[in-house]
Length: 132
Image (cartoon, rainbow, N blue to C red; front, side):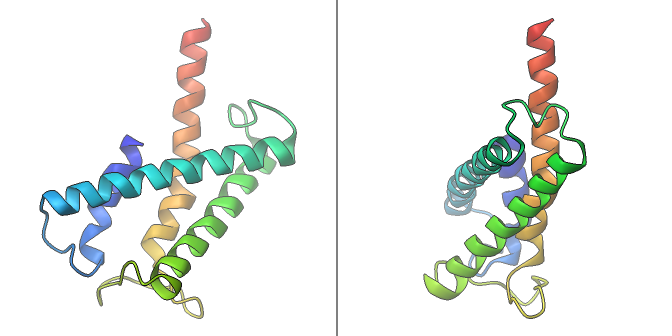
């Protein structure tokens, strides 16, 4: 969750009303990072279902990374699209790069593609240290 919180803080200026840091922005980013944590748990569950191994993320191999990247991408696109176009919960500033044809932000999508492999590697390393 800490990694996602830092990412949320870094991308905050790309959202309307969050260009300047304040307590409200810090709180919003914290809540968003909790949602990001839930998405990482969903990626974990999809990995269990698809790869049929509880610790698939410890040694993901090609199939595991494909699960992480595909699921992370699809979740991020869904959350951003619903948040922007269905619920109107947030808007992008002009500086947010968007995916052509989808109209959703590149940076939040990159978050769910880049961070889960890092988070899973950290979790696996912690598991190995505890197991030794």
